[in-house]
Image 1 (cartoon, rainbow, N blue to C red):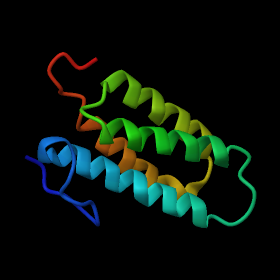
Image 2 (spheres, one colour):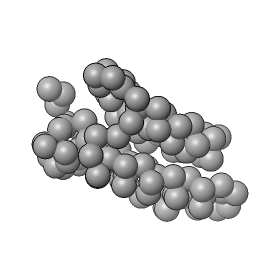
Image 3 (cartoon, helix red, strand yellow):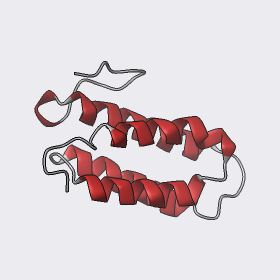
Image 4 (spheres, one colour):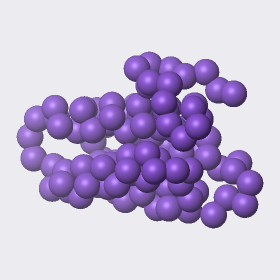
Amino acid sequence: MEQLQGDAPVTGVDGDPRVAELRGAVARLRRQLAALPGELPDRAAADEELAALDAMVSHGLPEVPRLRRSLLLIAGAVGSVSALSPALGEVRAGIDRFGSLPGGR
């Protein structure tokens, strides 16, 4: 199993570290997005999708295509903000860990 990084708690579906890692990455990106000064036209859309992503992984193993769709929506909303790039990369890495799910739908 993967080692957890940062402040991701060891919780989730049956203790699956992928869930904990992704939830931690989503929480970090949400905090950084909230702390971002200035106007971001798609801030609300990004925050809503981050909340949906967190809910998905909190309620069982998520479907990989839905995770990837969420990532595209979030990246589209915040992708041009270089200050959020590292946190967005963590979310992507967390989603990529689900890519090898059996029957990954």
